[in-house]
Each structure stands twice: as C-alpha cells, then as structure tokens.
Image 1 (cartoon, helix red, strand yellow):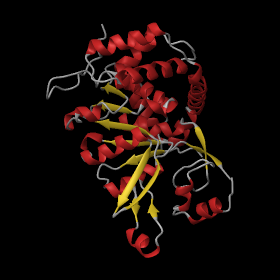
Image 2 (image 1 turned 90 degrees about the vertical axis):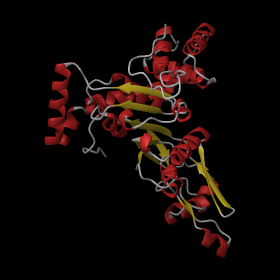
Image 3 (image 1 turned 90 degrees about the horizontal axis):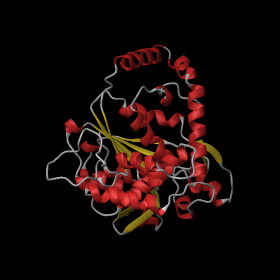
Image 4 (image 1 turned 30 degrees about the vertical axis):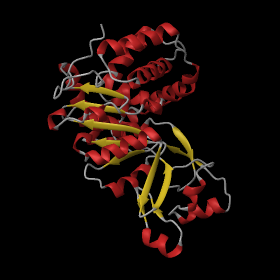
Length: 340
C-alpha cells in the first residue's frame, strides 16, 4: 500500500549526485552505504525516507522480526519472540510474502540495547534457554538503516553499526550468553558538518560520500516551493501525479540489479582506478574496491555492460571524496574532487 505521507523520491528537485548515490546502494548493497553531508534544509532526510516507495521487493517469512527468507536461520527461528512466526518455523511451513525493502530509522539518542537487541539473562539462567528481543539491526536486515545526524551519535554506537554492516551479522553477549543473527543492511548517514565531523576511520567505512548544498538556480528553487506546497496541501494527489515516474524508476532499479552480474571492466579500467586512488593519496585498498563496484553499478544503472572511463570518474567522485589523505583537523572539501 502506498504511503502518501512520504514525499515522492521522483519529485525531489536537483541534488542529482545524492539521489544517484542512494540509488546505487539500493542496486548494490555491497557498496557499504553512503554518507550525505550538507547544510540543513537540503532534502537529505526527505530523500532517504522517500526511498521506501522505489525500493525493490523481497521474499520474507510473514511476521518474521528478522526479515528472513523462507530458507532462513534456524537459530533465529528458535529464539523468535513472535509466537506465530516461531510456530510456523517449527511446523516446517514454507509460507512467504513479497515485501518492500524496509527503511529503518535510528534515533540519535538510541541506546546500545535498542540497536543490537537484548538477551533475557534471567530466563536463560532459570530455563537454560536463550530468549532474545530483536533490536534495530534485526529490523534492518536485508534493508536500509538510516542514521540521521550520524555525527551526533555516540562513537560506540557508530562503531557497532559499521562493524555489523561490514560483517553482515550482529552478535549480542551478556554474562557468558551469546546470540548471533544476520544483519546485512545498507547504512545511510546524513549530517550537517557545522555540527561536527566524524572520525576519519569512521568516514572511511562509508562506501560513498556526497557533499550537497542549497540549489542556486532561481527557477529550481521555485520548483521546490511549488512542489512542497502542493504536497503539503494534498499529499495523495501530489504523490499520484508522480506514480508513473516512481514506477519507472523502480523498474530501472530492478533491471540494474539483474544486469549487474553481466557488467565487465577491462584491465585498463582497473589500472585507471588504481592510479586515481594513488594520485589522491588514499590509505589502504578499500577505496579501489568501492570505486570499482560503484563504476560497475553505475554502468548497470545506465543500461550498459562495459564500464567506461566516465563511469570510473563519476564513481571516484563519490568513493574518494572522504578518503583523501588530509592533515589533522582538516575538513572535507566542499567542492568536487580534483581527479586530474
């Protein structure tokens, strides 16, 4: 069912690189998420929340709090707090439904237990059985975890998010009792640099980074006012007017997901990526790998099978901006990355 309270993604004016970075992560979750940096009022949160209407569908077990497919994790099923879901698993029912990929929001004041979930130690000691209450990481499995004002989150919470995103699982340990469940999600963070920066080692864990600002073109700013006013006055009518554009975008995303495995890049292209990463002085090899995956995903989204130099340059702008080696206390540049 369509949620008319959410502003349509297709109706967002401008901010093309931000929208592209989000779409590429929807197509390829191995890009390791995106960090969106920009001043307030630039549609950062609007764009992320609007993703829910164009996300692809996945098969899930009905009512499963871990968003598992039919062939899910047996340990998760044995500890499932949802009685109906657990009974179905025990009886071997293979019922599944099509569900939209979820966008799960992380409150800035979220505690560790709210994020990772909790183990009932008292129950475990009394009965010898584990009882787990899933957290946000469980809800975000196979979906998108959105951290607004990610730079204001406790560093410990950010470490947990990034580690889970990298490992694809979440482990909770309490008093010698532990439980692990899958937690494969796309991490999307938004932030206003005026409110503080992220640590460099945390920046590097985001696959892509885009820097956005307010629109300078007067006509586009008029379009922003017109569309937002129309949405506020009649959300349903406004959303319906963009339903075809949203459907087309969803179809294009699904086609790109299917095409990605067919996309290739030659040795010359990979050498170009390596030279770019060396020229801007990035540390390690994560930048090379992310740039390669981004270029291939962009190629798939454009409906092609062979990566071009333009794909590589466009990918590098998003994959290298936040990884350029800087002096202590030096901030990320506001302008585009100079690739030479």
